[in-house]
Image 1 (cartoon, one colour):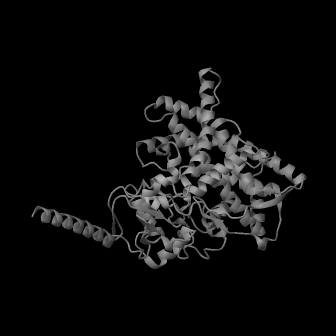
Image 2 (cartoon, rainbow, N blue to C red):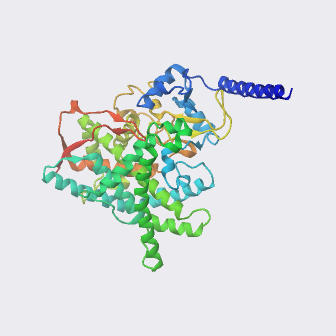
Length: 491
């Protein structure tokens, strides 16, 4: 009798559990029917943003997909994105952390991946105060200008020698040194140095593996095995950057112990902030934040520059308009002034159109529901991953005329901007998880791009019609073929 009761109890338990699961499935958004165990894995190709965009046309603006044991809700339309990132922002602001990211020693202190908790608010406050505040941006403008001047000198020498220049690598060096001077008051590499290989290799590895399909993410039971060697690759790259940053911190701490003059850079400011907020912001927070800046700042800025220059090479008339516009704000010393460049309308339409057509981040970092939430007519349970396909929204013909064409002029006729309020265009995301570095990225990309165009003509190694416009999916969309050209100085 007891055995029978136990059997019935187990049966009822699993029946109720199965019934609850079916209930949630009925309440969840529709989606493609998956296979046992692997779910919709076969529906997702090597470029997930494109696969998900195609699936959403059939299954709707909110779509449920299952990859292995992980269930996700995908949005590919501005209205659905607004529901998630604005109306239900707090509930949907959690993070799903890829296994590769756990290779970062203190990933639980990384602003991109931690929950929107007290730690996160403290780090965001430090970023706003010491890096992206308008006054701080103006104060540090001279450092950014110095790095661009060094780039121009290198390009002049390359022009004299008739040497080819890898524009993506060059932009990466400028971006890395702008970050290192902002943080440490010194360059960390130069254009002739092999050190760029270390930075470029580390950052590129992380961009690839953090966005790569990882079987350990969809079958968490496999995480200890790291079957694709992804976490090991990420650990080596993170460790390299971690050691570089830790070395600068150690050096600065000794400098301060000896009561030597301050540098007045971001590291000094963060150390001061830490001394005043010992319990909430320590050396681990500082190191992790600085590593994050190198990863995000260098790659995304240089990636945008490379795509923008590519499009201008393909459209000489547009290039001529940018050059003429920039010439109106060049000082008597022949330098492009950063503050004035912020008011050049056509240049910024080119940058916006580049970010629309060649999004650095095609899928926003995965969100997670912190509790059960109603999205439209559907009920989404707690701890469900949410993917926002901003690539699909930036190419939606409902919002964009000729969406596959590079047409900067479209932004002259609209108030659409990238600050998170226009949901058809979210290169930096929206809501509380929106990228905090927008003001800095705007200045870096504008100044660097204008300098490339104003001071030099460029000779391609092949015909324009042979330009490879393919990209490679990762955490960012990289050019499949590097952009290489000969600079020709303009007298």
